[in-house]
Image (tube, rainbow, N blue to C red; front, side, top):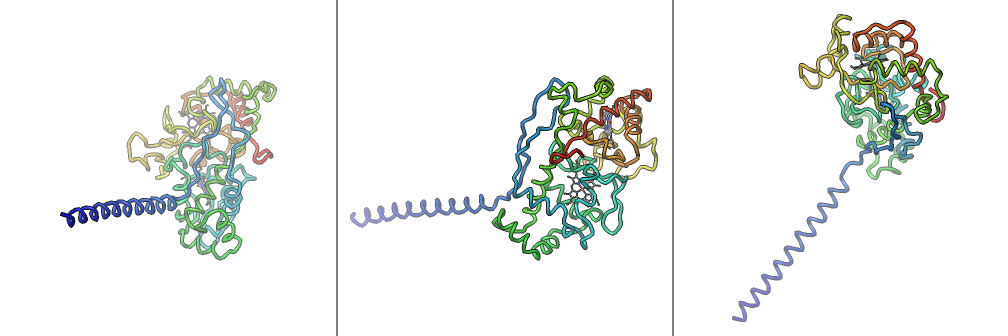
Length: 345
Ligand code: HEC
Ligand code: HEC
């Protein structure tokens, strides 16, 4: 009888002990799991000023993570991130050339041309997808693809990490921000933080939107009226005046079939979705800073802004506008050039 109660007591104690053990194990596992979570900078929601217009201004101040941005800025210019140190991000995305390079197809690794025109890196945080065909929904995955793409950076993470680890200043800079030092995740995190900081607010048009009615000339205002009235704004709208939807290149007729010599890159979002309805469909590009990012279109086929506007009126709207109206729209588009770090692009 006594023996039985002792046995029962021991068993109860053992039960408690087991429970405590399991609980502490769970706590340890949970801690390990949470500390192993990758640090990934995602675009924090920025406060956008509402306007009565279909376009909103870029906020003048956008909070950034300064140490990460400084590190990302260095990495952006560093050829160590490419095959045999041939290119840096800046080679194709030059800040003195509107965040792109003003040629139809950039010259990449081993002299290979990029398959599409290089888009600007400015204001990418306001795009819902990345690349002309809208393949990527986040900038970290986009960077993975850029790094291994044989035409752009042409390298692999382990190689890039090794060459950064040979630079004591990088090892120090990384360890100050990231406990685990130079890793692919951390390189991406710093570059993405930098990309998210590349915004060009304070365009004349933004000042106009914010109430300064003298910020535009009467011709530019007329250009904006036409831009809205003809329906350009049904596709080019929002903060980035584009970058928030997919549309075919050719609603009325097909620009690419008329141009001829269709290449895989001309199939647009079809390459991503393999859905027939997405053939020749592209992410509508942003028109911010468009006056300084010629040539235009994913194939770089329009040399001038007026040429691009002409093609748009023909293929997206099925109209043909007088030269004067095209020029007025071009003048309006010229007011979309903003400032990077306080200097006009
Ligand atoms: C050889 C030229 C070249 C180099 C070097 C290069 N890029 Fe690009 N970049 C391009 C091209 C071309 C595209 C468009 C690709 C596509 O649409 O398929 C692009 C697209 C982008 C985009 C997407 C923009 C958008 O709105 O869709 C970002 C962001 C970007 N690059 C950042 C970078 C960063 C960061 C680096 C360095 C790690 C880099 N690029 C290096 C040519 C280059
Ligand atoms: C049906 C949607 C739609 C309409 C309407 C539209 N666009 Fe576009 N726009 C696009 C798409 C999609 C592209 C990208 C085409 C490509 O390169 O594949 C584009 C590209 C452009 C470009 C070139 C941007 C660059 O960086 O290469 C300009 C400039 C432009 N549009 C201006 C206009 C103007 C001005 C109007 C009105 C006259 C207009 N668009 C109407 C969808 C549209």
